[in-house]
Amino acid sequence: MLPNLSHDEILRYSRHLLIPEVGLEGQRKLKAASVLVIGTGGLGSPVAMYLAAAGVGRIGLVDYDVVDWSNLQRQVIHGISTIDHLKVESARARMLDINPEIQVDTYNEPFTSENAMRIAEPYDILIDGTDNFPTRYLTNDVCVFQGKPNVYGSIFRFDGQVSVFYAKEGPCYRCLFPEPPPPGLVPSCAEGGVLGVLPGTVGTLQATEALKLILGIGEPLIGKLLLYNALDMSFDFVKLRKNPKCKVCSPEPEITELIDYEAFCGVPGHHLPGQEEGAVGGGWDITATELAQRLQRGNNIHLLDVREPHELEISRLEGAELIPLGQLAARLSELDSADEFVLFCKAGTRSARALELMLSAGFRKIKNLKGGINAWAKEVDPSLPIY
Amino acid sequence: MTSLRIPTPLRVYAQGQTEVTVQGATVGQALEDLVSRYPSLRPHLFNGDGQLRPFVNLFVNEDNVKDLQGLQTAIKDGDRLMLIPSIAGGSG
Image (cartoon, rainbow over all chains, first blue to last red; front, top):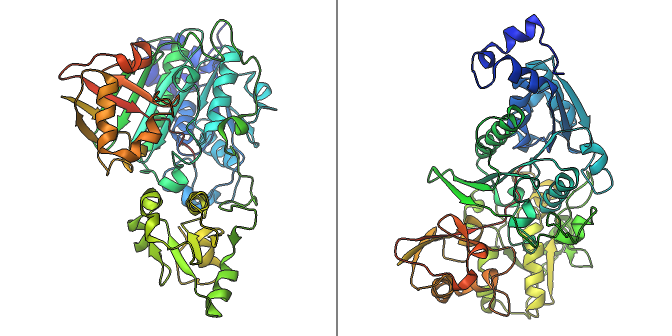
């Protein structure tokens, strides 16, 4: 039995009721539906707002982060008034402001192998709006095990991908990507950047797919992958087939329960607040304060900036040599391994990778500036901006 | 002559190219032509045995070469090859 709509709801959804493909029955289906949105960032923002506005009766939000100043360039569900608030609470308040008729459940915790099956259990559809490989494989496997569609969206700089992975009717995420790329090959948005409007486009497409699945109308992106490029304004589609040897969704799967996804991907899925990012550990790090002291003592240290040339316009360290990470392997011969180097980037992630590369090439007198030039701006030279 | 689209994460290894024209009668020959011109791409596409790495997806027009004849898949003039990357961004 589908729930009835009140007079207020009929007025609110009148533009839906006028479409024959939705109508009163479709709107009642939306009211009866439940969707779990994993991540309330760039993709989750439009997804959560549009599903709320459309009248999806129960929406769950999973995120463990707080709203940060640098989120506002693209995460349009949050605002100045909710900086430092929990993202799930900030998003919930905005959604209920759009539509108080719906139920919004919040899960202020990382989505992990321990809690994912429990959190996802009450929902019909999962929407993948995460920013890392471990959580994407986890979301996929939960959907396969619970027989639910996974509305997938992913972005990088100007590129977006959208699909519906639904193992009951088509391929799953692992059919296309049996294994994640090695750590470091694909930079995250935090390192590589993203055009602010891109998650808006991709998230809105994910919300569209979720509504189509609930309403049972149109052709969902099952077995198809949409590739969007904002610069070319190109939309390409490719066909996806079920992998008969898929480790989770084939008739004889190798994986039948959730695994350790961080180990599988070789990267952490979650940075808890206060956890150190941009550090290598093992004695290879140097803090900005230590570096400043050593430079002041006149130590002969070569500063190696592994950022991209356009980042110099934002901030730079005097005397540093620029070799972008992508060119470092080819340009190592320019460097003398007898010299002492301190490597840095924006926040320490790329320079950590550069350090590993130089270690494997035999360099030993090298350090990674922990926290990058942003840490230098914070601890040593507040005249530099943090970005 | 076949056009091959290079995804954003791999462009840094292909001198920033987005689309290149490659020669070859099969997918394998076309990729060999590509990596001979951009050697830094090779380790990102192939493993030590010369097979495509498992996270690399190459499509001929709409079809994944894994669903066709892999590197032996024949290609003809006017086909479009697309390398499709694993990307994970979303929330940040």
